[in-house]
Amino acid sequence: MREFLAELQSRGRSLVTFGWLNLALALLFLIFWGSTDAAVMGINAWIKPLKFALSIALYSFTFAWLLSYLKSERHRNVIGWTLIVCMSAEILVIALQAARGETSHYNTSSPLNAALFATMGLFIGVNTVMNAAVWVLFMLPGRTTLEGAQLLAWRAGLFFFFAGSLAGGLMIQHLAHTVGAADGGPGISFFNWSTRAGDLRIPHFFTMHGLQAVPLFWWLIGRHTSNPRAVVLGFVVIFALVSLLLHALALNGIPLFFD
Image (tube, rainbow, N blue to C red):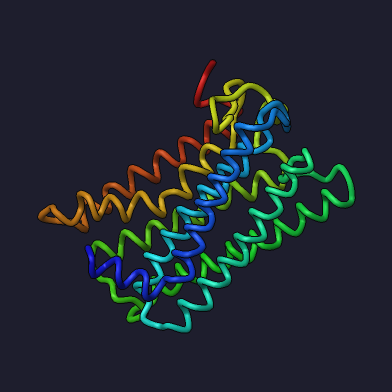
């Protein structure tokens, strides 16, 4: 483990540092949450920046781990810094809009809000294309230091992450995340996922975090079995079926949680 962490710090220093910076931002947003009653669409304005800072931190640490397996230093640097720029733009817009008391996503209520949403969407698009490029690199032979079940796990995780972006695309297309009701209604604590209608944020969240779930399953369970490839493949199939179910519920306006 010590050698792994040293290698991670050596090959993914920029992303690891960026992850820690976002954890610091999350702490700052948590303080803001506790010190203001400012609300956007019925919830504290700083909850959304807090969630995204935590998500970006996890994303950064994951990609530092993932990219450490690429043989090409040039690929690691280009991909790493592109992701940092894209995620910086996203968290900046989200925090700025929270401070202004405005929603950051799907907000075209004024020229400035529309421009900020379009800018964020542009960087999210670049990030998605970069993730697709990483998946291609992992699919090509000889580009990584991985093999067997571990390589399968990362390939599947990257695929789920890219597939989860499709739900994000649906939300952008419809300028809303709730299906069967207006955005901003009753929802569960913190995540605010709708308890009255379908919510595309649920399959988006679940599917994208396959990037962490599948490799962690290999690390914790799969590699300790007699046939790790079959075990990992079985987990991938189950994860995919659950993802499809969550998408079907959301698209048909059916809430996963009820109040």
